[in-house]
Image (cartoon, rainbow, N blue to C red; front, side, top):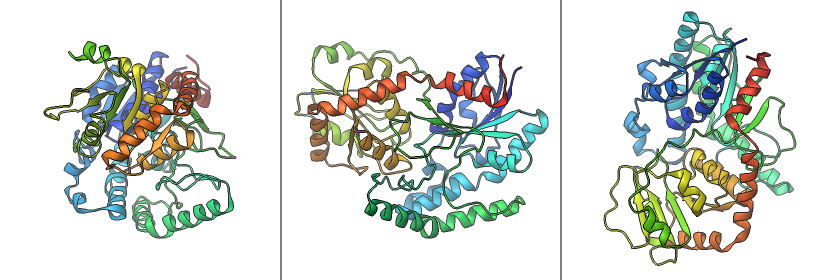
Length: 422
């Protein structure tokens, strides 16, 4: 019998796009999907076969970046900025999220709520008597474990006594000092909703089913994984058809190793962080550089550089030798699914954790900065190009990704949870 699902996601691409393959597969199987999120995603949601439900305008980002939405955050740095983002971006919307979901459920009940793990209102609706929730991990796995470093700083995992001691100390510091004001802020919101204080920690994992975007080979190994946590592969929407740039044949004819550099779709406001330094770093190298630039014009370029606002990833990645990236989780998975090794330079949001996993897997290098020097970029790219081990590990991960059809596996797990088959 058909399932009625209510999706709920933060109104930003990295939280919406990973759920599109799930919606597409569920609707193809005859299930009903309604989707509560921002208006800019209405067309993509409809194209996936789901019914768009507009969230409260007070929490809809309307396609704006966080600096536009919260200009006061621009003057903040480090921990102060991280605390601000956790409160303003993820916690303050909770009351409106809860109200909006309950209003939609009053209009039409649902069997399940499926939400990205950052959409905290969904889990609260269940605690207030609503339907069961299914969480989707759209970042590297945040679930704590004694043998995994605490999430956030991008620490290297290890099993020796000193590393375990480091992890315990950092975990205590994060929970009781760094994030203490954040937890107190969250607990005030919970009390206003008639709920007790929450536990320390950042993880939001459903007790019923958690669909983790990624494969086990990319994640830090852990001795125990809760039964409800399922790795489903790369939750990435099929690449939108992008016309080949006019320079495509000239680029191919050069016959040089292709290095692709990108700052993703969100952090591309200042291409001076990674794209421009990479172009300068590799200008005299025997490689071809292909850069995605979004709305930016980079001006005159070295002879070995080709740029376009958007690139045909379905054709670019299979011929790419190295990808230089700021560590966006979706882009990293697209690259690894094609066996492309990586150079990662990112320190904001979840990017340190993405970089740490790439490094541990052996499929690339972690530069541990958002603004690497030209010298460090050149050295890292040359090291990956010359090191067969990086490509071998990336190809091993690619084989693991190929064994996971993320949309199909996710739909299978959801059907199994409710005992439904159409």
